[in-house]
Figure (cartoon, each protein chain N blue to C red):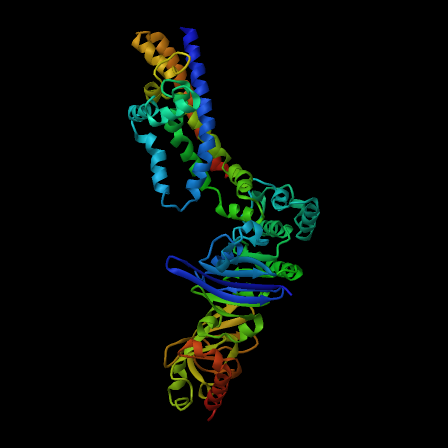
Length: 361
Length: 226
């Protein structure tokens, strides 16, 4: 089984990158994080385009970099396919010349022909990159990288240069491609939709550190910290103090301080008297399949976002309402994020009791 | 008079062609290195390269003459290696011209290289291309017009040289007497008619060269790097 092991430390100016993860199997990993979190740097160190201070990078038993042994393979010998954010096509070469740039044998030329067909760019073979659309450029860059039979594929923000109206379609075709090739792939993105469409695994980063790494579903369902929850698009990360006032929850054994994360679609409106949270509705916006309701919690003034399906009624702006939450999906993070992962189950039980208390007459 | 003038034209063309070729050979790697490096030496090398732009030709010529003279460090070494002195020879003015025209070649090259997308260089590396293959297959084609501009400017600037050539090479017909020096000779001899004819030819040459350079640069601006 393929095994990608990445352990590296690098410092440049004020910024330091400290990453350690191991991926077993030919899976796709979406590296997710806000801009400036070190995602692109991570790809560049893996590809050998920059040299880290300390690193041990092994892919499929090939040691790419081992600073203890003074080994640092140049990018030419790492067998890594790299699709740059701007695709970095050779503008002076035709599509075909771009694709066969890395070809070394006649066998590879036939391989290039296959990729040309597979990616549906055979008709463009004599065109120059200046005359290609964003999606076509991306396919040329993918073909160029895959023709060299890489052992690892790296994609840096592959959809940032794509017209937003075509992004979904192109994203799903790239997802199909990544699942088809039998090598691990690392996809850098700051867009949650990419993570959902492309990632078998998620690697959540911020400030040069890995905050969470694991298979997609468990990571999406159980962020280990409030910061990860925010990066994963949980729109309600609220102070726990909200549940510790008004008397209805003051006696609950919640941590003294910290945060609670609630998905917008796991909250629903209920009559004010039965609510866990009392809010007034600030604004209602149409967001495709749902209506997004922006509420203000009456005591703390915190903003709470609720997604309501079109089939359900929505209070009008300015009205008071109650919000009930689905405790099994809530995540509680005591003041220190580090303690959160260990006590996830325990906290879920606590939330259960919050909800029960809240619904008491 | 015509024969001696044609001789000086021939010397000038030989000097300019040889200087341009030598400058491209040294200037390409130097400009590429200057574009890519983060070395602390970069500002120093850039300063030295740009020095001929601001130095009076007589100052540069004087120091080169001291260096190239039979007792100068370079002149002595040259004498031992090739058996003839460097000062007051054609070889001497070629070396001097290379130094004098260096910024006119290196700076346009550096500008052209800086416009090359660095990601394309890295893409070539990840595709297995060596550094030299990347330079010749990816960098140079993208900087092609810059190379052309550098060549034309280097050639034209050498054709127009006067002070440095006079200091280092003197005024030896058939060896170091270039067109600009011939014109100076004619003025000294009060032959204004000939001087005017030849000066006008040089003026036209410079006009055509500069027009060519700006046309190339204008096309680059309109048509992208390709």
